[in-house]
View 1 (spheres, rainbow, N blue to C red):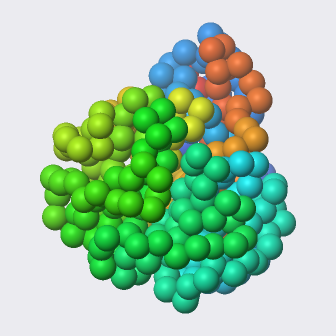
View 2: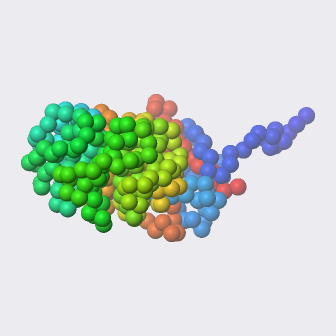
View 3: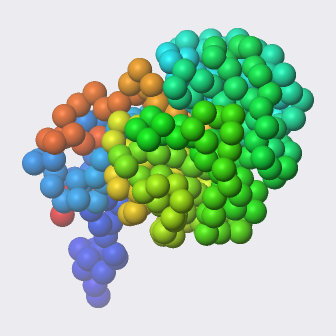
Length: 324
């Protein structure tokens, strides 16, 4: 007859980095730590750190804020000390702190899908090639985009003083002043939903996870985004490329070539990501809007445990195995 020890030895035990669920009156086994967002030492738990890493590069937890709308937020930017988002039917709002928002008149009833700021000019684009500019994000002037295709993405590259828009069917154009636009070849016929410039690299992304890079916004090279979900937004700030999209998909990269999936803590579609005043902000379907601050600990020596809570009737606690 087998002993209890022999039987338990035959059961596969959790590996380092795996999480278990216990009732709140149960005591966890040895070598487990609570999943409570605690900061611990990389040197103390090297095996666990190799599994967990820095859970979200540069970002801790997201905090819900009131966006002032229940309309779908399609795009969100930060420029000239001002956050700006735009929605369906020409909705547009501004904020100085990403918490309190003021509705503005955009001058259009078309859906706005793209915003950018550069060279003292805000620019939006949207359905039917609608495009407008503003010096303050309050008063807007309509411009001719040169396309009837829907504009899904806009950027301003302050290194090369270049505006770029992209949209349905792979349409892509550039401009030196946001008024006169020149069509370019994107290398794809699927819809481009997002475009960004950072660290000398232009990046676009879109339907089915399509993603490409360029050094001049003219010649483009396809890259592996790591997802087949539709990517709706790209951002580059603080040395980090970030994309977001369908079902809350979120990915980050330091070079725009190798991408790593992240936990956005939402299943809503993410349509806007930006960074300013040491705060990351994302927004999307149903008016979802969350903010996150930078790490408040030394990422060279420490790391954060996962944060998992359970508000069900049974109130479970979660623990992660830290070493063998």
